[in-house]
Image (cartoon, rainbow over all chains, first blue to last red; front, side, top):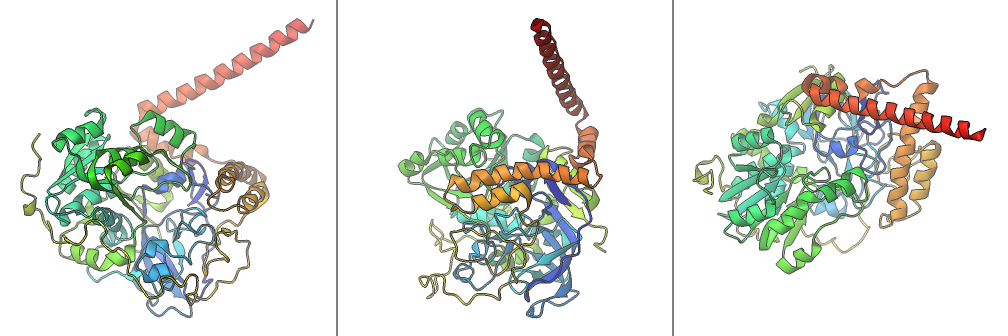
Length: 381
Length: 168
C-alpha cells in the first residue's frame, strides 16, 4: 500500500526492499495490522508524512534475506517484529528504553525510529506490504515461539505491550481504581492488563457502544458511554466517593472526541497537535497524588491541557513509546499460559489488497471493527 | 453504583505482576555507568548515505540507519529543506512540514496525471466499505457535498451574470 493524501490509500507495486546495512533483514510479511495510531497518518495529521510511503508498524513475517552482520536470525525464521527500530548500542537502548533509540530516526531527536510512520520516525516503509526491510535485525525482531498462533504473535508487536506498559506506568497498587479513556484495542488491552497489576476496579470510557460491550466481555471491566453519563470527570468523582481514580490512562491520543473546542482546534484545524480531550479528562479525573499514564499518540507541537491541575493535585504523569523488547519475555509467557488472549481482539481479517477499505472501516468505526489484520497474498500461511 | 466485577481475584492472572516498589517511580530504565557520557557510544555501522536525508539540527549527524522511502523532491522538498533549518522546538520547523505535506498531495495528483493515471478516489477512500456498512450516512454525506457544490457553482455563476449586466 502507499499513502496518497489524507484518507487516500492505494494498493500499488513497489520495488523489492534491499539490504542497505549489514544488520538489515528482508522479511516476507505474513500478517500486519492497522493500528489506531495509523489513523493519525491516514488523516494527514502527522507532519512530514510523504505521499508514497507505506504504513504499518505491527507485523510478523518470514526472514527471506539477512545482512552480513546478522547473527540472531536466519533465513526461514518466523519472526514478530516490534514496532521500534532499536540499535541496542546507544545509551537509551542500554537503559531499556527501546522506544527511544537515538540511532533510528535522523529527522527527529524526540522520536525514535518506527516502521511506516512518517519521516518524523525515520522515513521507513512499513509492514502493510508483502516485503519489508527490517534494520537492526539482531536487536528487536524475535523468533515466534513454536506453537504460538501467528495472530497472537502479530499483536505482541505493539498493541499488547502498549496496553501492558500503560498499566505498568500507572504504578497500580492492589485495590486501586483504574480508569481507561478509550476503548480501542490498546485501551481494551490496558484495561485487561490493569487486573494483572492488582487493580481493584477497572472502568473504561468511550462513546462507541459496540466497543464498550466488547470491553465488558474481553476486559471484564465496567464500561460507560461518555455521551450518556454527562461530564465524565464528575462521573468518575461520584464513582470514587468524590476522591478521583488512583490511576487514569489515556489510550486515545490525537483523534479524541468529546470536547468541541479540542476537536475543532486539534483535529479539524490542526492548531493543536491533535485533540487532547482524553488526557484533559485523565488529569481532571485522577485523585490528588495519582498517576496519569499516557500511551495515546499526539503530534510534535503543542496541546491544550490543564497543566495547572497537574501542579495543584501533585499528579505524576508517565508516558512513553512502548519498549516492546523489554516486555516480550513476560508477555510471551502470559500468552503461552493463557493469561492473555491477544487474538481475541481481532474482529476483521482482510486481504492486503483491501487495505483502503480496512482503513475506512477502522477510521469510521464501521461493522463493529475493533482490530483489523491484513493478510498478503504472499503470506503462505 | 456497585462495581460489576465483585471479586477480581477470580480473574486469570489477577495481581501476578503487582510490584509494591512501583509507586510511582518504578525504574523503567536501567541506570548504567555510561549515562552521563553524552553522545559517545560505539555507533553501529553507518548505512551509506546515497540519497538526500534531512536530519534534525538537534543532532550532529544522520542516524546509523534511516529509511529510504520518498526522499524530498519538488516544491514540497524545497519547503521541507527550509523546515529542517530550524530545530524541533520551532514552529518554523513543524508548520512548513505540514504545508509541504499538503503541497505533496497535489504533486502526487499531478504525477499521476502525468503518467496518464486518474486517481480512483472512490477506491482509495474506501467508499465501497462506507456504501456497504454505512449506506444511509454515506448517501447523506455525498448528497450534502453535491448540493453544496452545485449551489456554490450556481451562486458564483449568478454573480458573474449580474456584474456583466451592470457593465452596460
